[in-house]
Length: 268
Image (cartoon, rainbow, N blue to C red; front, side, top):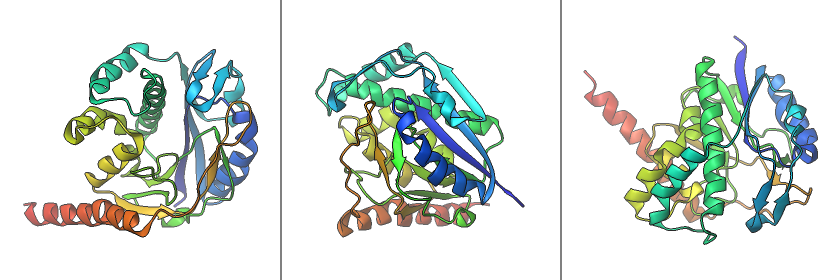
């Protein structure tokens, strides 16, 4: 049976004209060799980008999203009411960026976009493999995972740049796991309350994965963030330290396995 593969883009495009060639060559083309591919995209319409933290200020190309030629596209204005609600809930726990909430708002906007495009896949009947990618990243090689080997409960993230949690920039997920990765914003307030700390995207991902029953794995697939002006961000592709990988293995592999065994043993 032909695999149904979803390739997902979300957030804002901002530098797609600089990354589209690598996306087509290293993401879409390899996936088409394995199965039936549909590209899903959700983008917020912004007439201006203002991110002092990354030195990006200016007007993005409003038509850049068309370069993806996606089968499903949703574009809408930012949901400021929802963003303000999240900010009101999360800011009392602190602000890791100390910029009056601007960086936190940008991350929340991205995660809201991710949640909405994930819901679109669910509404479309799901997919056997879901590849979450960002439109503002230049991919350095073909997908390093054999997509035929992706099981329904598999969730795979890069083994580099975990920033205290798990790399949250791209992922390859099975049918039962993609919603864990894509809908994680709904756990943001619970994360801050339980940890008694400020919101942190990579740490949220690790927390969500460890409380799920997905089969967590890592991959070597590399990509570099490209700013609106075409400049590449500095990236570190070295594997995270052994101690950190061991911690992730215990939290995200051993723990979910024990949970699955417990549930199996207590089911009638």
